[in-house]
Length: 298
Image (cartoon, rainbow, N blue to C red; front, side, top):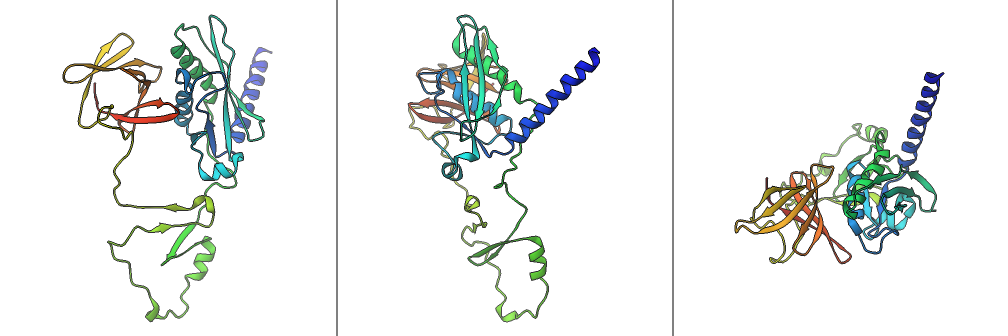
């Protein structure tokens, strides 16, 4: 009897997970607000940056509400919108994340994450991470109407056409080719080519010339790599970063992710995380999200 009950509960849980995954796959974006309704300030306790980071880490195409892609700006129903429910008490921080569609209907709701840590930033970090455990086992892949389909793009000078494979095979059969009209190959040093597809959403411009990175473009008085190396010295709960003076420039506090730290410099607070081998300091300056690369030696 107990085994039968366990199997029934397991089957229901698996069914709910499959249903949730199918629903999430219908949406192209997840939109994170700069300020959740539960808080007074933008990114208070680093809640917005943490939620966006964790959702992106799970494979979702996550954007902030003030930087919507063109297709989402014109059709908000392509996205799900994140809401944070804060049911905290005096001694326990409690958070639940809800994903709603453009009509305000609940599509996905996480379990309630809890933390008894007294310090607010660490408490919300722990509670949100626990709530995010509800996404375990969800393998997201966008399957909506605008998902990219297998097409072949042909370029005839400035006339670009996307054809189905069957149409291409029919058109490529030899039919008395006039060699006088055969186009010469473009020289290797030709200008960057514009690649287009039939839908407005998939218009793109690919420039293969090297472009200087503008991540965290700031003046010299602010933190930047600029060849300067900061050395990590272990302290309680994390590290302090010192320059070659040596002067303490920033403190990093450990999170449950070994590649992400809560960060505090002389005048800024944010988080430091590793992306493609590069350490990034991410913080808010007013309403603007800033990302700056750091050169850290551990």
